[in-house]
Image 1 (cartoon, rainbow, N blue to C red):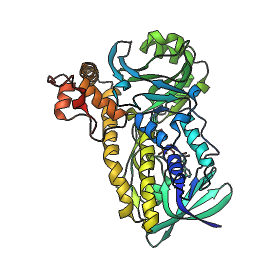
Image 2: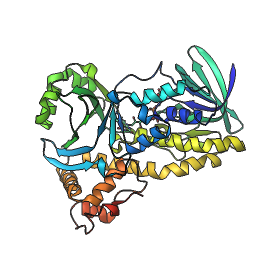
Image 3: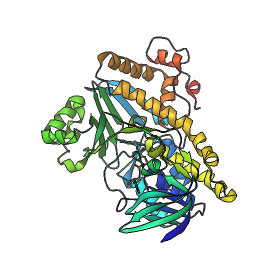
Image 4: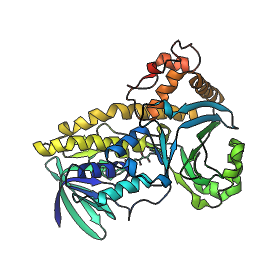
Length: 423
Ligand SMILES: Cc1cc2nc3c(=O)[nH]c(=O)nc-3n(C[C@H](O)[C@H](O)[C@H](O)COP(=O)(O)OP(=O)(O)OC[C@H]3O[C@@H](n4cnc5c(N)ncnc54)[C@H](O)[C@@H]3O)c2cc1C
């Protein structure tokens, strides 16, 4: 059976789902193939940064997220292992209305997007449908093949979008070379409970130690704990009390919260990787999100960037359809708009990996010194905040800023938040 559509999207993750909904709102016929049996149910990172909130708002979904499943967080305290506060970042310093972080219960925003897609007549979202290959005419991609349940199918499409994650099969089929780096550390995520709602987020750094604690809806708390990739089973084998003791050493004041970890089912492991590719486009095909540019989660922006990719591409595709022009040259407009911010964030996240994940006491000393400077320096702090919030395209620090952040130079504009402005 050969079907025909305008846009075929492979993957209904953070990028693919937003793209499908944005295209539907423009009345563009879209088929989305997702290999999973249904909407995701597991634990994952659920912090909506201001740029992600803006995307959801543009799609008409931000205000519809159920209040009992979301939590606004204003302040993030960065602390040394043991509890000493180094720096506090306040999202309230950002321009309204997105001057906050939003933490949701697992998959709340994603389910809202998937539910909205299901209501759109121009989109067909198909679960248990796995991409198997591309259809080509000469060198141009003109569609794809997939396995839907047990049936093989072919879909002719004007543009095929690979939104299928870091290990993208669409990228492989396009023969786009990719440098895939798997970081030696990943994250054990846990959903915990507090006796009363936690006020602010806390993020502890120490010798090869990172523990993030983010207030979620009600009095839930998300914990993110860095562990060696591949060590989840051995962490489990040591038992829950061993993990709780490790956390109590990091933040003794949160012992009652850590004691609410009573079952490994409250946890999950998330590996971390980075993807770099020389191009995100081909004649008749595009990559978005992690398929094009996965990044370390220190940036807190991977999914947000996939969403912004989707919106940027959704703005370009109507013009492609109107002019019947799907060449790599035309589609590159999207890549040109998106690459600078993504590249900047990938580099920044890797610098953070170097400084935050370190076991080296000198690098750790410098990291803590930078945090302490940021606490006193409103200009540099705003630069970092606006970058994490997804509002900056340029790197937050130039060479002089780095020297000031490390405390080697005074900063005459330290109190001048406007000088830390968004670019
Ligand atoms: C520990 C951790 C914490 C994170 N925290 C944050 C955070 O706070 N904020 C943030 O913005 N980002 C965060 N991220 C990053 C974020 O999870 C990813 O960047 C984001 O999910 C990328 O979206 P995507 O749509 O590109 O890919 P994915 O979400 O991976 O979606 C790809 C989809 O494609 C499907 N698929 C794959 N292959 C096929 C195939 N052959 N056929 C059909 N379907 C297929 C998959 O099933 C999946 O549904 C975090 C990541 C980690 C590891």
